[in-house]
Length: 281
Image 1 (tube, rainbow, N blue to C red):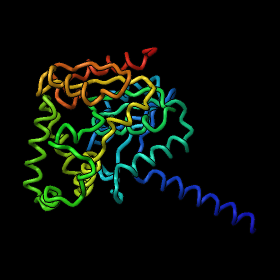
Image 2 (cartoon, one colour):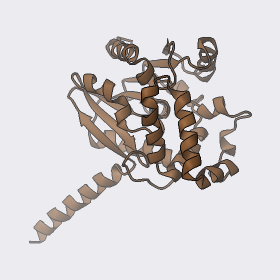
Image 3 (cartoon, rainbow, N blue to C red):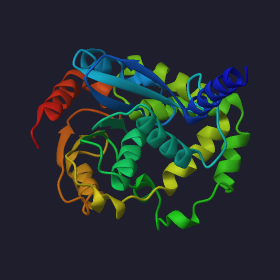
């Protein structure tokens, strides 16, 4: 009887650890083959990649993530992004994933850079409109150490009523995709997001500065960059500055596409991803 109790206790502990290890995200797993970790951008669910992951699952094992505070995943405590990174590392170890590929959009791509800069057990990075230091592009006199949760801007966002927040979300969606049919989906994800996660999670993202750490990345890196609204020349210069410490990477530009390339240039992006996966470099 004592041994039986010990056995069930061990099971409960194991289950508890498994639940805890995934509290910062939910994963939809499909397909078989080499694992691909699919990280969406800020506020988005794994659904943003559905037109890509469905065909990829015919040849790969897809692990499509939705992060805490977004979609129907409950929020977690802060700091938000470091917890996600740590628990992804645990997830890879617990599931014995060998040589996983990372496919990330925007914040998801930045997260991929962070993971790969700390561990070269990944086999490839495929980044969709993602930067190592988003804050450096957005904020003048950028200093990651000066960015804190407590700021007038954050307080304003937290206090914003639903009408004003919806109006802001609609303006943002309009600027991030040229595909008008997808705007409402982007708005819905922003409105569905836990407000504190929206505010403080984005603060975590702005604080992230990987421009120096990426010099440690030794695996192939493929970047697909949107050109709208700034134009290819400006975008190319920004990417060159941000990635100057990454020794080797390939970059392709999605002409006539906003930030959500999977919505604006879906066929082009799918072809680029397939080519990257089949590349020997």
